[in-house]
View (cartoon, rainbow, N blue to C red):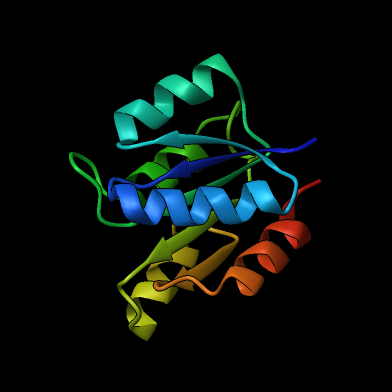
Length: 120
């Protein structure tokens, strides 16, 4: 069973994303900030991270770049998930190392399909 870490500070969005992934058979952990995410990753390395862009403290872009720079986390696929839907936002997310960029509101089928393609 694959574990997905959902990093989302909006409780409703976190519940929607986590619930969708649980229904698809994934074990899901939720973090509400970059700092919270780093603690959870240190405790148990997830198979994939769904990462919001707008977070308290550091942004999802910054966290993505930081995770991709570390040897112990660089191989974890990251799916950016944000209301920021401009082409430049998507480009920047991929440039930071994200494997995919989904916009909110998240399409549940697209989320499950994207995670399924990236989880090893």
